[in-house]
Length: 80
Image (cartoon, rainbow, N blue to C red; front, side, top):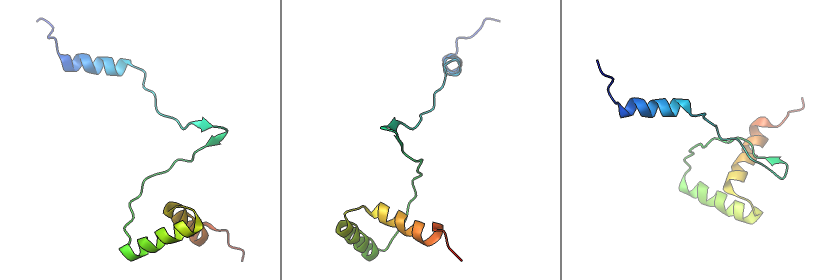
C-alpha cells in the first residue's frame, strides 16, 4: 500500500519536532514580578464605589487595597 499524504500527520510531526519554550518572568532592574492568577470577585456596586474613592484618596489602586486588607486580616503574623 502506498503511503497517504496526510497534512494533519505532517503538521503534528512538525509541532512535535520543534523545541517548545515556556514563557518565563522577566527580570527587569533586579526586580522579578511575582506570579499572579486572575480571580473574579463580585462586589455590590456601593462597596466598589467606596473602594474606588478610598483608592483615589490614598493614591493607590483598588487591587492594592484588597491585597493589603487580605494580608492584614489573614496573613499577618499574630503574636500570642
